[in-house]
Length: 410
Image (cartoon, rainbow, N blue to C red; front, top):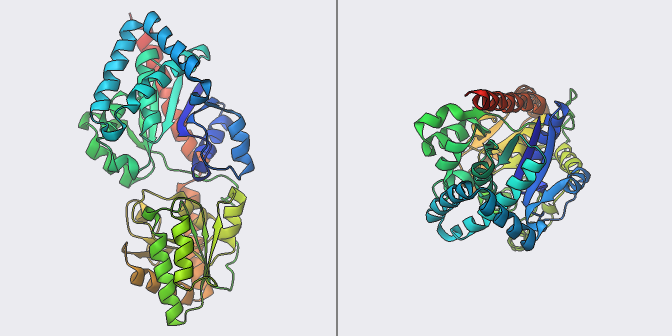
């Protein structure tokens, strides 16, 4: 079965879960074409991402003339379909706020995609996230009849569900994957009741790089790690405030922060202001292997997020046998069980975060290792990419069969 994977930006440092999913589906015999609306905006540091980039078609790199010609072709060859797609683009634009004008571009991108995908005999389109790529997939479906599906993550998808016309995108999708029970509940709020049966929990998964039978022993030194995009939502400023409290309490703990993003300069400045240059290190973006090494050097992962769905980095930490200190929000409690495989705290409190970190590093090492082992067992059971890819494959094949039956009926 030939599938097109469409994302706004691929490959991307923070989207390794998409790459794992694609590779797992290819292992199941799917022929997958990669499409990205725009090129990667960040330097790629992982060899697998660099390899994926060479296999990815970037829509906007087709050039304005090519995109215009395919749009004209769609108008001349299938005027009724183009008119219908144009009306849907206009309706979504009316709710699109500041991004309303972008919907004209989504229609142009859909004209290009519908031509290329039909020429390649693509049978299904799958999209991650509910923003511009999902709009292009919907419009492409209206132009070409190629069915599409989405995986919705959040929190952006839920925060801007109305602006994104998420209900319309779900209505026309063959099915919709959500990465957590929390995510399914949030999406149920925004789509029609008649579409609830389309929603399927398909969790982000880990491959053999992380899921291994051997749990590595924890280091004796109290080294913490935070991994993620450097953004206000991720709570790194609160984490620095907590580290400052720990320093004043005389708690010996170091912190490595892995990732990049708009908050980087402010974090650099804050580290100096709080006198944490000896305690905190900004490591920048790392490859998949670099992330794994950072986890293996750590006592625990700290996730002080203010907004999330279910962070993949928690799965990666558990897979390496590392316990987790995290905020009790969104889908995180589906993974982190307080006192069992980590510690949960309320979001937004530097004092509560400092207390939890102090408690974690004060635990006997065998207690921390037991927490990590519990987390490892849960991830192996609940977040294996091979298992999750089988779920997705079954839904795609079911869609193909349903379409075949519909076409064969008089």
